[in-house]
Image (cartoon, rainbow, N blue to C red; front, side, top):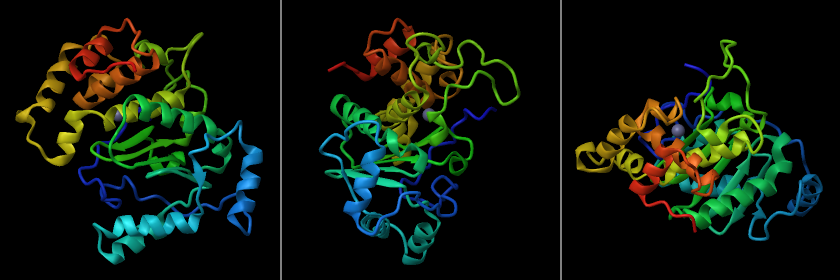
Amino acid sequence: MSDWDESEHPRHPRGTDQGGQFRLAAPTVSLITATTLEGWVAKVNRRLAGPVPPEWTPISQEQYRAELHAELSRDMPPDVVDMVLEDNVWPAGIWRAGDHVVAIQSPHLLHMAPFIFDQVNELQRRFPIAQPIRFAIVPEENLRGDRGVSVPGTGIFYISDDTFDEWPTHTNSGDPIPEGFTMPVGRSGPGQVEQWRYAMIHEWGHLIDPAARDHNLGVPSYEGHQRVAQDMVEDWSEVLSRYGASAAEEGVAEAFAEWFLTRGQTTNEAAQAYAAWLGWRWQ
Ligand SMILES: [Zn+2]
């Protein structure tokens, strides 16, 4: 499979050392340093591509570390917490809005913060999730070839920093990207959406997917959503992207990316069928 694959969703939402999903590699050094948070904010603000929405306020790495420590300690023994924190990549920039936290781990993407917050805000306004959002832009090498990772049933999701590159024109094996590789909204040409938005909204599709949430929470598949999701992906595989057709939960996420990025106006039949099933409304 190509580098477009995503791994299975981890069964243990807080299992940061389970399955390698959240074991991030050696710490990176932030390119922007300052002796005070205020000084740091001033430096970062000069790099941003526009104003940050006012509800998003920067927090220090120290504060972030303390909060992460408290959060992980609820479910993990102290030695595991220490190990996870030891291995974490300390973000170049961290912002908070209420309970929600967005971390940009890759220093070269700090300037994208305003666009990222706008997209988080829009997703949360239109398709809110109840849990605190923990969203990070993660160095590509730390996702091991995945474009994104999410933990349905929580607000935890990551996307790879290489999704901020241009869409690739060829696969890893050198073949041109085939038709149907993405949903129609991801196709090249005028009006094509940015790859990072597509990846981010795909992951949000997992977060709001009731079948994936049930799967994570251990609800048996015969009790509802998962069985329907399986029927859906089989019924609509012809008009889903190849990746969307590859698994029940990927069908939901790909349909959501298409539907959301066209503001519900897509003529793609799969996206409309999923919207009808899951009650998606553009509001
Ligand atoms: Zn996915």
